[in-house]
Image (cartoon, rainbow, N blue to C red; front, top):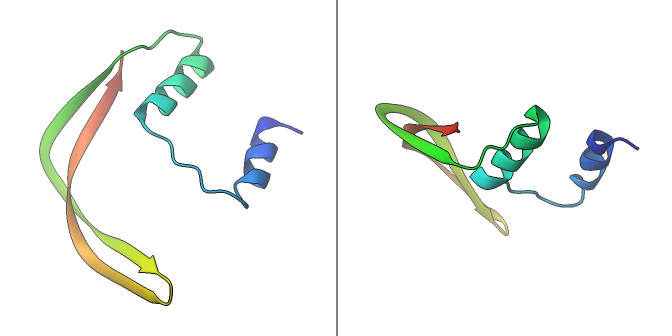
Length: 74
């Protein structure tokens, strides 16, 4: 079974959350480079998206304004 097939199978049972350092490790392994630092680039650009929250029988949503941030691996 390939890694992708295994991930697709197990993601049906569990929820995976990746942070910046997980992505850094993945990018490092794929590119055969040693990326060991992130640089955060903050902007004044924003975008509007729908935020959701649901607990039990309730489900709420609202419009949320987010600031765009770029992260560069070096």
